[in-house]
Image 1 (spheres, rainbow, N blue to C red):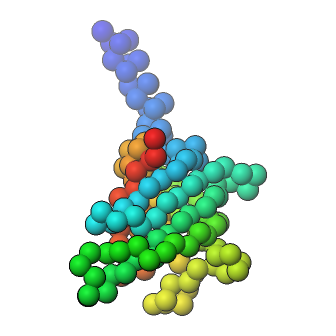
Image 2: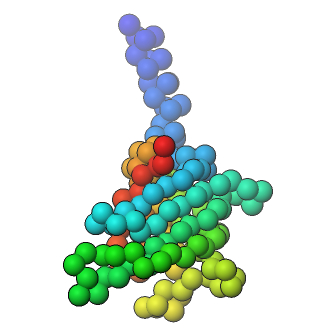
Length: 141
């Protein structure tokens, strides 16, 4: 009985660092984000020689007061850069086709996005912009 209990404690201590931790492979794949039933973003995360990267497609929405519901007006493809992992969150910046890092219009600083894993198939995406939405992300099948 005592050996069984000791073995349980040892296994728990060994496994403890794995709880709440994610690896770069957990983020690889296509992630779809909708906001109020309208497509908002698609992340296509890949692992390259420099670590995590890939492409993001942000949808341009008409959210004017005259719009009954948000309407897609267009989209913009950007490159995912400077990705880092900490616990269950991937933080990254995006660069447009002109090579410019996307800026926060409120602060004038580079805009950072944060994808927080809720499970292997779901997460939440938010940016440093306090006015920006939090978008539920689901892994594409």
